[in-house]
Every structure is written in C-alpha cells, then in structure tokens.
Image (cartoon, rainbow, N blue to C red; front, side):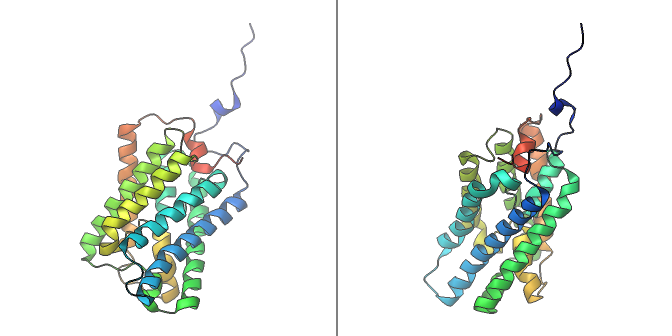
Length: 251
C-alpha cells in the first residue's frame, strides 16, 4: 500500500513561517505601532502626573499601560502576535516557537516605535518627568531584581496562555493586561514597572540620558529567561498552536 504523504505542517520546524502569516513588513509596522503607543501612554501618564499633581494617581499609572496592551492584543494579535516588547520576543524564541531570524526585525521595529513615541512626548511636553522615562527610586541592584521579577511574572503569563491556545483570544488579552496592571501597582513607585526595554529606551534615546538604562534592558532579559525556564517546567511539551500565537495567524 502506498504510504500517505505527511501533512505539510509536520515537516516544518517549530517557529517557522507557514505562508499564512501576515507579510514581514506588516508585522514590523504593527510591532512599531504597538511599542510606540505603549511608550506614549505609559510615558505620557507619568508626564501628566507631573503636569497636574494630584490628578493622576498610582492606579491610573498602573492601569493605563495594561489597558493599552489589552486592546492592542485584540486589535493586532492576529498580525504579529502582539509582542510589543523585546523581552516577549526573546522569550518566544527561547521557547522555540518563534523564528530566531525574525528576532532582530521585531526588536528593531519595537525600539524604533518606542523612540518615535518618546519623540512625540518630548515635542508635546518637553523634558518634564524626564520625558516620560522610567526612574529608579531604589538602588540599581534592587531595581534590576525588581524588573527581572516583574518581567518574569508577565512573560510567564504570556507563555502559559500561549501554550493553552489563548494568546490571540480574549482570555489572553485580559490575563496579560491585568498582569501588567498588577505588576504596576506594586512596582511603579519603585522602578516604574517597565518590564519592556523598548518602552524604557524610547524616551532615554530621545533625551540622551542613559543613567540606569542598563537596568531596564538587563532586568527584563533575565526575567524572560526565567519565565521560559518556568514554562518548560509547567508545560514541557510545545503545543502546535504556540507558533501561531507567537507569530499571529494572519487571519
């Protein structure tokens, strides 16, 4: 009896494109747009608090970026996977569900978008609140541990919702958005609860103020690695839907 051909997907390496995904250029635009919007909202709420003391509190600072990411997952999760964060892109690649060759493109798009967002904030409001940049209110060492811990929590949620088929659905949008809110309620007064190197670097590059910038790059990177290790402990077998979640399904 003639052997039946295997389905095309079974021969394709995990994390590689299937041809159904959105074009690379469109994905890059979406990642830049998302990172830029996040920088505008997260940095803008800090500047608004400085401009109008007493009008913007910790709850607003925590909720603003969380709600933004929530709606952006709804809007663009199917196009690019809605990373908007170099730490998330790194985690998906380490997990083996996102092609390493796309990592530099996503990182570049995210950082360029964040710089554009930081530039808009600078043009609108000047240098108030350090141009919307994250500020450490603890030592650099404690800030590093805090950013790594918060990022590990966030990325663990992202990876584990992806392994259960829901990263582009309503459950993931809610889970990720509210994780950002919860981390912000704790970490915002201490480190700004960035959990995102692009969001942190955008205003820093515009202002050319690099003090403690390394904390917001190294901390999330460490957190991403820890989260990937945790994901393999809790979900050791990659689900076939994870690459779709990481890339977007192009529908």
